Amino acid sequence: MIRMAEMQDLKEISALESLCFPAVEAAPEQVIRERIAAFHNHFFVMTEENHIIGFINGLVSESAILYDEMYENADLHDENGSYQMILSLAVSPDARHKGYGKALLRHMLETARHQHRKGVTLTCKEHLVSFYEESGFVSQGRSASTHGGFTWYEMRMMF
Figure (cartoon, rainbow, N blue to C red):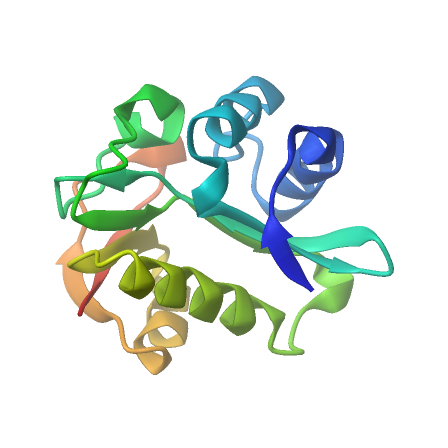
């Protein structure tokens, strides 16, 4: 089941974020709290037996480019923006390779289309470029992002 995140999900989401991302890359609990508060209608969780096994979230912006400050500052969310950003897509390690990540991604894309966004932007590491290309994203090449000290690739899907 996929549903909007609620503040009562904070601890479980934060634990999953820490499990799925390196410490220098993972959003701290306070940032996740701010994201849920600022754009809960763009923050979805997947549950199985009442436990969160995955989530996807991101703010909306007038910019088609995802900037590093978007990861830290939920106040940059502009509900009237043209582009849906994806800041995190995480699936519990024991639930991977079952299509859950693609289902969460599909849900975010359908929501963005329904909201008449122009497109969706995300950044990913090189080994995930093909995963997003399979879903229709087009690589924009290396991103200017240095989030967590890593090399990122910007991916975009235009509607």
